[in-house]
Length: 476
Image (tube, rainbow, N blue to C red):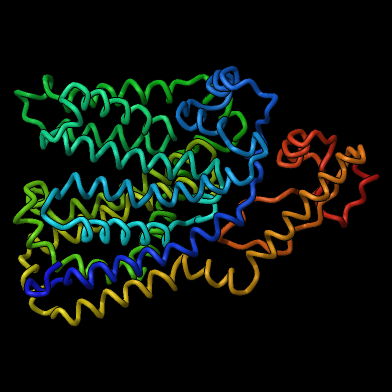
């Protein structure tokens, strides 16, 4: 951004971009301390790939995209490096998908450096606020089912924007096929994303004039959304999976608990200091965005209360389904999805407030170039030392991460020794280090918990016991 326009100079933008890139180091470093657990061990090399896909659809869930990826887990081949590289790739794909969306949305209104900065800032806000960083990035089943689904969804939205801008890949026909492909893949990741897509496409369809409502590309996408969602929703496995949760389908409890959790996470997220700093800096470019990007100019005319309501709807759609289908919120994997969508919609809300009240020029005048530079530096520091990034740095510095890694490696050594000696029963000591950045689940006391059983089967053992305070003989 140019200083004469009260924005960043090209030189500072480059320095700012480099600082942001360096801030990825803690997240990348964590990848090489991650370890498989629980669902990672559900399937092994002895499970036929396509037969298992069918079994999952018939007896567990209809997540056709996610199920394909789950059966591609590198740990199935005992490839621990591949397991960790999956996290690295995911961390890289997040800003790339956001950059694709930003590029599709604003085109040439800003430089590539500026758009990259925007994409990385949004990425850091998402990573910093994820309710469960461990499940979202470093645990393969959770990462592939939810965060990768969001990445595909952003690419899909970018493709839709490009379609209406007539910026086709190859040609119109190929672009339509690409849109439908990403639509189907995005829906197939998980139920909450499916629900978001159905509602979003329905609302988008309603905004079309009646004369074009049934003969438009938007209508085709809406029908496609219904078809793909039906495949997931009516999968036979959903019924059998529901049998594992006897306290599900309680409407009053589901609504009550969803309301409480919605309020909790809404205020937790909007109180994140880096989000406010980034919002203030965003206000300085709204005038230029409205001038050069017709879609954003149109979005700026939305009533702020509508954009504000969308933030609550996102949370509701990601919280209610788990309570309805299981009776509990359980792990925060679905809330990771909510976080991924909440951040962009927050900036849409800021955009509408500033645009509708003509505040952009006033804010830009008040924030001198030197103030913007100071806020930029403050933003980088706050992103690095607060939220999940701050927690990761603290756990790395205190040795909690290395301690966790050491304990998990000791378990692999125990397993290798047992297999070498023909020992069929192994006992694991409880983990002393459970870093929030990486820890998801652990072996449970005794030997009958499904986590113990799945890992034992994976490694060809008879039983794996948890908790050294329990006598092995007493559990046989």
